Amino acid sequence: MTSEKCIHRLAAALLAFGIAAFFAAGLPARAQDAAGAPATTAQQGQPTPSSSPQAPTPTAAAATPMPLSMPSMSGPLSTAVPHEFDGGPFGKLDITGILSGWGSTEGDHVAGNESTIWDISNAQVFVQKTSGWWQFYLQAGAYNLPDLGAGYLSTPDTIKDLYGAFPQGYFKLVKGNFSAEIGALPTLIGAEYTFSFENMNIERGLLWNQENAVNRGIQLNYSYKKWSTSVSWNDGFYSDRYTWVSGSLAYAFNASNTLSFVAGGNAGQYDKSTAATPLYLNNEQIYNVIYTYSHGPWVITPYFQYTNVPTIPKVGIPVGVATAGGAVLATYNFKHGISVAVRPEYITTSGSVAGGAANLLYGPGSDAFAFTVTPTYTKGGFFARGELSVVHAGNVTPGDAFGPLGTDANQPRGAVEMGFMF
Image (cartoon, rainbow, N blue to C red; front, side, top):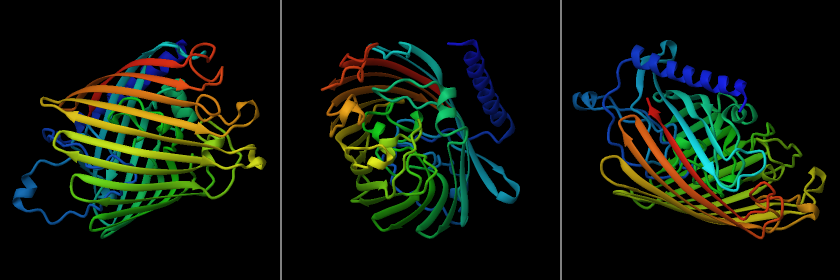
């Protein structure tokens, strides 16, 4: 690690700590954290209901404020009770944040990666207006997006190569059960969110590697009784070309059981290829079936995913490729702030081209199984969690798998993450 990167990381940590200290000292002290249960749904496609508060009663006015719905979180972590302040012409605003660091060590690391890393995982602030007919959400700061079975990208490089220092933010219009959002939006696709603190596990999984994360565009949301639906016109994998359409439809059988269908795809063709806009993934169609059970100490989310990249020779895809996979995301919450999350998953690919160019996993026709376990401890705004995982790849193409030569089929990892929600 160069001294320049060390200085950048230290500066980012000090900046985040200063922001946290400023808000802790300068804004009204937040009430004691409420003991929040995990979210009833873990899918990203579930629309957020409008928040037009009723006139407060004396009892409601004295009640402890509840955590906000954004950023979305599947548990066991929960956003802090917000700091409220007068935003002048914007009215009452809410602000929350996170400061956390993480480290990991892995076996059979690929060439160019260190076997052990330490970095900032999150130093972010969330500012939002959640009442009235017009609202907004702004997320800013440093972040890292570690995921299983993939090479590591440092926090400074993640910010530079992916979504910048303002990864998400949008303007929202609300009318009853209908809302419209425009800006840099969380994707509707998949059952895992983008940032580490939003998920049951520290690192995202194998299926997440096929999904987009942040969409720039417009999203419409509507809910009616037990139904919720969203549709979005956006730029897919951050391509800056608005040819993607995605949507979700969810039915809540009751407070504990929800079934969702999610789909998205590129209605056009684009040859752009960057870290944020992979050529094959940006030209794919993707489908999810997601079921969520949340009751008592349990949150269980099994889901199935299918993706297809068609043959598009003129953008550099001479032969199509597809993936199919499934995963189960499950958390059990014990007493005293202790919980354990597990995630088994499997994915397989089909289709190939000469030279292995259609490589969505570990070579054309490869498959992989992964298992992750993540114990977590929370107390107030503090959290600490560890993680053990292993990825086993099958039918690998030499050079595309693990180890210095890319020929090893297995990669074990251990990780820790610790920080504060404020």
